[in-house]
Length: 301
Ligand SMILES: Cc1cc2nc3c(=O)[nH]c(=O)nc-3n(C[C@H](O)[C@H](O)[C@H](O)COP(=O)(O)O)c2cc1C
Image (cartoon, rainbow, N blue to C red; front, side, top):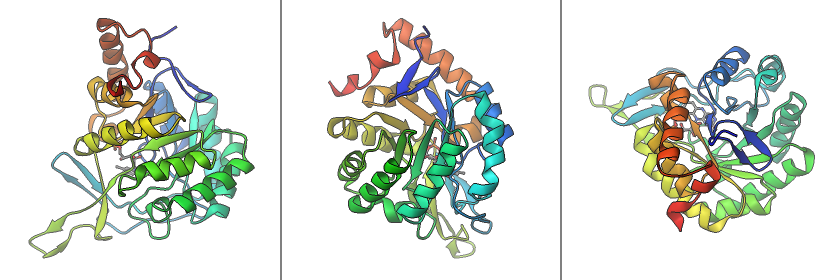
């Protein structure tokens, strides 16, 4: 058995790195390409009830240490996403990410993702730049618990809750997700951020604020997983700023069973998965870790 094999509850992953929602995962063909590049799973772009254009340009910019985006959850809507899922699902694990405005919408979306063959559904309760969605719901523990429990009662596939770092009560929110029956916690989504253009004397993004991702957010994500490992008993998935084996090892040692890579797929290309897999395996061999499980949470002990 490969040392890299891991599991998030009953979702078995041959490799511990997944594609994070929103990057190279909006079409069937791109999801297949990422699986072929060595991703253990692909989390789809967050899909909503209806087709959505997203925010006007500029909705994306590079900053020192990362990227700031305010895409505004663009997407084809759940009905049209069926054909993308049908193309990708036969090739490997596809986690269906969904973004609803309330428990009812999250439930309809999750039922569809289950029908389309997703191996799990990830509830995006953490996007910092889509009004009425994401973080606006995901910072209230009562709403988080309600959404998770209603979705849980409607689908058989595992339900993962993706949480925001833009709160001082992350542990309470994670506990609320666990109480609602979540099968795993995914952390973190982007940090709410802003870039100002001095020449134009106004915010650069059309939406004014967006979400920071990439290397700059890694210590925030690692801290989040480290804190959550102490308070919840369900599996954790780490995401934020991972681009090499060292970043991945930090998240696993903080307490994550698996991890996701987003921005580095854009900056380094899909080859990032093969590289992280190879280098992580070498580190594990050199330091006597026979499996990912042996490394999970060791920095917490
Ligand atoms: C361009 C872009 C689009 C994203 N879209 C989504 C999305 O649709 N749903 C979601 O849950 N997260 C989305 N994210 C957040 C990522 O999944 C991830 O949580 C975050 O970027 C931190 O990881 P990273 O530093 O590896 O990018 C997006 C991030 C970027 C950069």
